[in-house]
Length: 311
Image 1: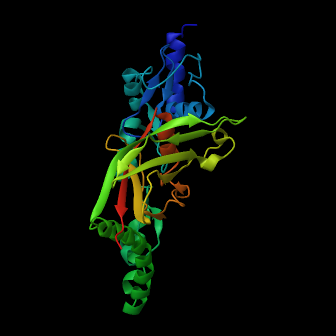
Image 2: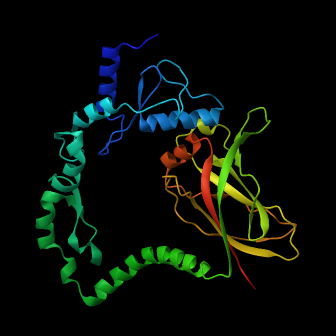
Image 3: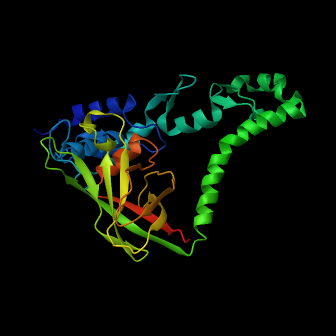
């Protein structure tokens, strides 16, 4: 059935105006081959769900096939949506979407802000129009040196873990034997009664050894497509035979052409002929939205770093 231009247009605009599309300075849409519209977030979610269910992703309106290659953006709709009024989350006033981000970050008098004495421990959060009154009465500038030292010590603890990670990475970069490679996880299904989705890379060589990476969704949860929270975990397998224990540190990061956000986490393992595979460890993706981006792709492309620890 062909879509009705007028009705489809007004329906799309109303859905987008209600916030179905993410409120960023640029609104992104996807359009199926019959002209039906989806916001970028819903489009990626549909592709990820289809991957988990081993189905072809389809348009929610007309059930035609959708994919990144079959769908296109609708620039006219994106332009129209950017001019539609939308409500500020702080003051509840209406603004065109194109101006909303600037208003919420810089101009809104009700936007949430922090005290300038946050650096010495003030926990105050409040509306911008109350900031001047609070800072004039803030007790933190009048605290004694000993009181401030106690506060700063507590704040330093939250930074030490981050600094420990970066120091560990810099230490690993001084190792003699370092290797990295681009890896491509390809999806496959088990032969169980309820098939499960797994990923595996082709064999690759790093540090003169042959390796394989495997990954799974939600730690093999029975029906991950029914869960809003989605995670990926992976394991590293040594396929070569070794004459002595091989002690390594390793981490996975995003590939050079992907926009997924992955936090660096260093893992450590001693490989032997008897113990040649790590446990499944979390792929440190920021959130389920980023996980859906990976699941929606045909393959998952990441970069693996391996550091051999010399005795």
